[in-house]
Image (cartoon, rainbow, N blue to C red; front, side):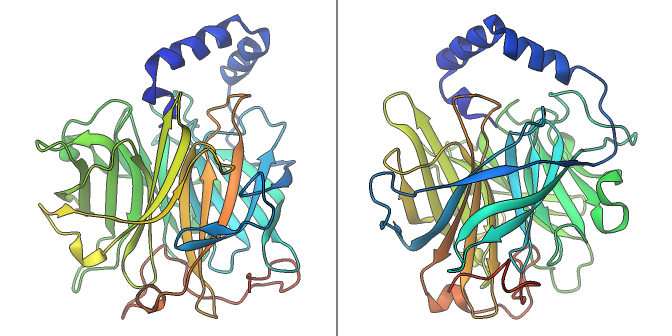
Length: 382
């Protein structure tokens, strides 16, 4: 969800400016035009940005180490709003979804030290609806969460969560690519009533249950509350939905979640206020704590504020390389605002035997270890 809901008065002010702006009006008119179903290649440009704008040698990021950031831009009218993220096991490819119902895939580039340095060829395509046609309604196409099966996000199933008309759909990208029609997995009928624009913000694949054959999903809302005021979460297996709660970490709100190699989970949260600006936290959740009806705590790993080059950080992905390093990627949603940015950031989780330990069975979506296809173009950071 766009962070403008954090301050509705500010949102109205920006909306008024947008309506008065000829450029924004033209953009809105462009978006109203018919949408082609086929994927299109797009030009992407990027430039490196510092983690600390005042100190190029500052890589400190709490329990993580910063390993590069870039700002990405494109002239494509529908580029922006990236809310969910999946990175391939070898770190070469990203897949993202926007809250305007678009896919983005692109090649990730690294420098000679293995730090994130740029972005390569890009492809965009509209998400298709159940009728096989592009989703054109914002109310129906507010995609927020993304998780995938397998090491390559383009060769398996992609699970997408939506707000407003709350639901989770599965797209078989491995079979049909971006022309895949979705399969509806779960809707608000089984989830219960959720806030219109603060529903399932984060979704992650879970390890299969012994003897189970349905994909298990972990879903966390942005701001749906239980009777005690904590954040609603769901354990989903087939048509079965069980609830748990995540302890509220005000003023932060969940935006994404991703599995760690040992079966724990990494939670991305963001905050925004006129006085404090943008905030971002990464928090660790012990996987065994997530049970039906449980109140789950999270443990702070990274706390970043406006002293860092961050924006509205919404998408999260984790992978483990063949050397045992755990890499964390975060992408921002620019809300299609000229005042905001599309940032892609990479961090290395500082060595922790509990996190680096592999589970008995690989966690879907955690991007297992793999050797990069091109050690020169895509080299894991040392």
